[in-house]
Length: 85
Image (cartoon, rainbow, N blue to C red):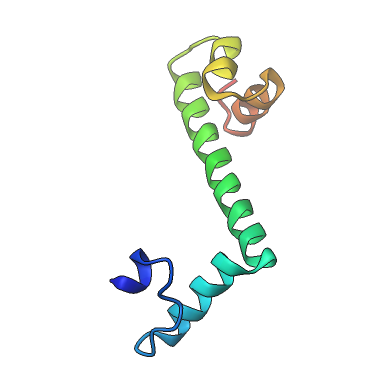
């Protein structure tokens, strides 16, 4: 478990692949950038999922946009893409 919880556990010989990946994501510019992109993509997917549920509940597009921090255009696109509006 140390390989996941301790910042300096990059060279655990029992888990070379995990250690290598963690070192890359924590200490290289490319790894940090990739991790930021993944996190941002996950946040966007979460916002879209919330928007879908709120559209199903018939909330106004403007209210959904405010609640999800999406634009009105983004909410409309999500609604159209999912055949809700």
